[in-house]
Length: 395
Image 1: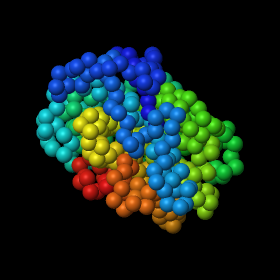
Image 2: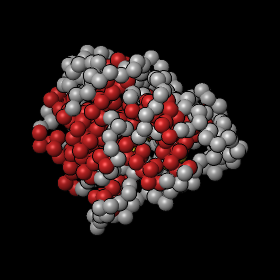
Image 3: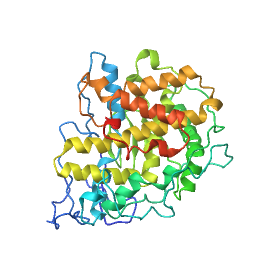
Image 4: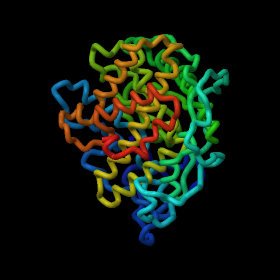
């Protein structure tokens, strides 16, 4: 889902949110530099936008089963694109070939409080008794890189990759029937789930020098307007404009009938969205979107898709790692964990479109399943570093 940005940095969230179509034209910045704040114009939308514009809901070509297409559409909306595009106005350093994520970078700057990574995780698996704060509707601002070189460093060598969540983590939730639960009951369940997610992810992020405010989850029934634009009545979105998650009461309808009551499916959806929270709070999200926007400015939608896929399959990996961390305390069986891999596989670009060579923005079923499975079997967050993986690995 697209987002709007206005006003000079570093105020967050911005005091005003321009409506679509109100962005001023570029002011003719020097070659290799990003336009200054207030003069930025977003790139034209692709024919198949990775995140729908406000009021739209993108669905790719589908196989005869319409439920798969709806499921894909729900995951497409994560609320990051225009936010990332706009913050590029802060990136002022000239771009050079060695700054790209597939090259080397001389940058050594890290997000505030973070140290340069080593090869081995700095934290060990185990249990944690740290308390969890209430949902935070006024979190601190997100880390933002100053240059493309710094963005590359944050993507490839982020200090969080040295860390490891506590596996197992003693955190279990009561089950919920998402097809029958009221909006209030579902919202309570999902907010309880964020407490569990924070319990898993806060210690490794803190060890890397990052904050992890607990994002509120807002359950809505019908179309709703947020700081990230208008959300359709079936959607699930992490909105970086206010650092909150929006979850449709009707989302259960997108799943095939035989999966609507399967264990941990709804939790896996939210864990994926929370994966974008992790990316946002560690500077990965905005850094990735900076390079995606750079590719779009060059009319290279294929390269832009690669950045989008790296972002998405990393969120899949974090979701898989969360299921690994809470499997024992939640009583998830091996068969249930395997079933979650198949759920992720069915969200692949190729599976949903029925086109084996489809150049999508979320990754093939094989790639998404592989990265989710990697998260389920790994301990170090570095196993989810999709930004040093080959393009084929995220295809």
